Image (tube, rainbow, N blue to C red; front, side):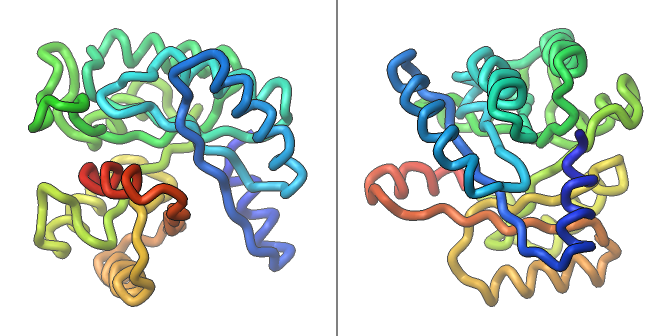
Length: 228
C-alpha cells in the first residue's frame, strides 16, 4: 500500500499520525534486538516505518532486507530510504526492481551523505549528482509505481545556507514527481513554521512531515547533526 492512502485515511478520521525511523544495525545481534523492538512498537500503530540507507550507503543491502522483512512479517508499511551515494544508476535500478517485486511502494529519494571520514560528497562516476536526478529517474523508469518522498531542511542544508534558494531546489524536486516532503531533524518550531509557510508561498502543496529526533545520547546526537 502507498503511504498516501494511509495518510488520507488518518486525515479523513481527524487523527494525528506519526512514523518511526530506524537505522539498520551493523550486526546480526543488533538486528534481532531491533526486530524485537519494532514488534513491540507496532502496537502504537505508526502510519509507517522509515528505514534509512546509512551514511555513504554503508547499510544498503541490510536496508533493503529490513524493509522487506518489516512489511512482510510485521504488517507495517515501510518507506525505504534510497540515496545516490556510492551507487551507480544500474545499482539503483536493481534496488528499485527488487523493491517493486517485493511490494515496497514507498521510497524516500535522497542524494545522501558522504561516507564517514571522507569529507565532501562525491558523485559516483556512473551515478547521479543530485536528489532530483534520482526522482526523475524513478518517475521515468517506474512511472507512478512508487510513492516518492524527498528531504526538506527547515534549518537549510549544510551546503546551502540560503533557505530561499534551498526551498526553490525543493520545489524543483516536488515538480519532478515527489509526493511528500520529510524534513531533516529540527528543534525550533518557529523555524519549521517559517519553512512551511515559505514552501506554500512558492507553490509546494504536498504534505510536509516534520522530522524529530529524541536525544538519548549526546555524542551520537552531535555526530549525526554534522550531516544535517
